[in-house]
Amino acid sequence: MECRKFEITLISANNLEDVRKICKMKVHARVSIGGGPENEQRTPTDKHGETNPAWNFSMRYTVSEPMLQTYNTMLVIKLYCKRKLGDRYIGEVHTSMKELFDCAKPTGGSAVLTFPVQKGCVNSQGALRFSYRFGEKVMIDKLLLAESWWLESSLLIPFLCILITHPLTHTPKI
Image 1 (tube, rainbow, N blue to C red):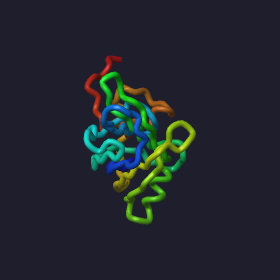
Image 2: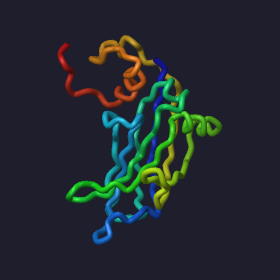
Image 3: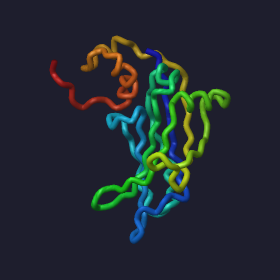
Image 4: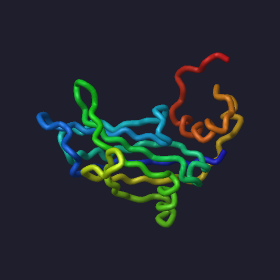
C-alpha cells in the first residue's frame, strides 16, 4: 500500500472567542485525520497567550495515498480551553487532506495556511495558523498489514496507515 508521511505544525491562533470570562484562557488543540479519536494527538496547553495562543508544536502521521485522492478524508483541528470541570470547546478548523495535498504540490509538498475558526455552521471569532508538509510516497508491505489484528475491510484499510504511527500496546487474541 502506498503511503506518505504527513507532518503538521500548529503555529498559533489569534483573536479567539474568550469562552472563560473570569479566569485566564489556557488553550490546547486536538488534531485528528478522519475525525476518529484513535489517531487524535494534542498540543501542550498554552497557559499565557489566552485568546492568542502559540504552540509551534509538530505532529506526525502516515496517511495512505487514496486518502489524498478524494475529498472524503478530513483533517480536523479542535480548539479547547482547559478547565478543572472539563475542557470547554472553542471552535474548529477542518479541511480535506486532498485540498492540503493539492495546495502543497506547487511548493514541493509544504505550505503555511491560516483558516478561520468555526463553531457550528458559522464562523467563530479567530483564526488558526499552521504549516504542514507531505513526504515522498513509500510502499508499506501488505503482509505487514495482514499480520495486524484487524480483518481486511474496505472501511478500515484507509485508516491502517494512520494507525501504524501509533503502535498498539495490546494485541487481542483471535
